[in-house]
Amino acid sequence: MARNWRTRWGEIDLVVGKGDTLVFVEVKARKNLSKGSPEEALTPHKKKKLIKLAQAFLATQKTEASHFRFDLVAVDFSRTKPQIRHYQGIIEDDGS
Image 1 (cartoon, rainbow, N blue to C red):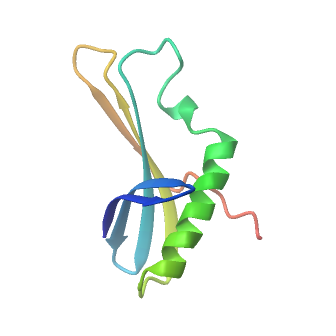
Image 2 (cartoon, helix red, strand yellow; image 1 turned 180 degrees about the horizontal axis):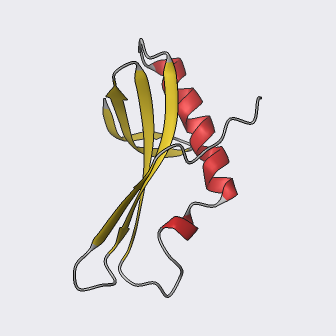
Image 3 (spheres, one colour; image 1 turned 60 degrees about the vertical axis):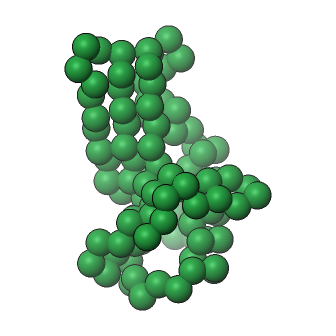
């Protein structure tokens, strides 16, 4: 549905429709691990920001999705063969 969707507050890397679910995807990549793994780059602050960006997306885009999910795609280029890992549901519903 969208790639590199931007607002003045930040960017959502990918928004994908899958059935009745809208998936907000954060992509993190690292050439080396000197600053940590791609997964470690997804901080609690970044997760809160993703939620706010998703809310902005939903407020401005027409969608019939009844479910929403946040995923992480971690790309590790530090090895001879790049490693790609996909994590579904990276943000838990805190009831708010």
